[in-house]
Length: 161
Image 1 (tube, rainbow, N blue to C red):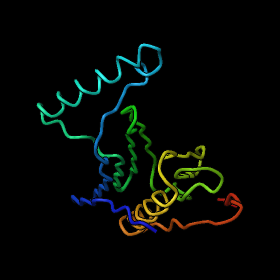
Image 2 (spheres, rainbow, N blue to C red):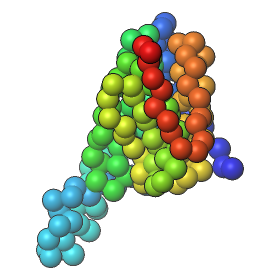
Image 3 (cartoon, rainbow, N blue to C red):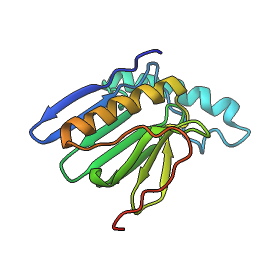
Image 4 (spheres, rainbow, N blue to C red):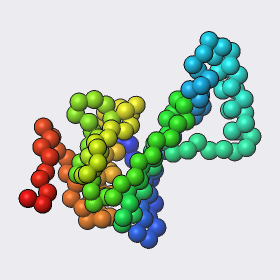
């Protein structure tokens, strides 16, 4: 399995794990690529955007960012194609599962009391497995939680019974 290392920064009680954006990074807004004139507009936009980013020294955003605080777990993902940002935030103690989705692509996050979410659907399976293991280890070591990988059918835990 290929390794997808996260850059981990610790500052006090906060841990931030970052997956860098692969280069080259030239996002095209979805509005530009939706019409027929995109054949002309998209190449011109890509060239102008690349020149502007180079001259201004603009670095690409991280592909994925995970921030772990004592009361907050935040994830932020940036699409390589469109530059769209997806953000998710929850209480880290309420995370039941954090693993590769069994039935489709992506990272499956099950939060107690909320719906289940799938993120990173455009990542490869081996990348999701590697990143999920690293984030689980960070959560378990930083907050002393016990988030495990559940394989097979998921049976919801009965709390308070």
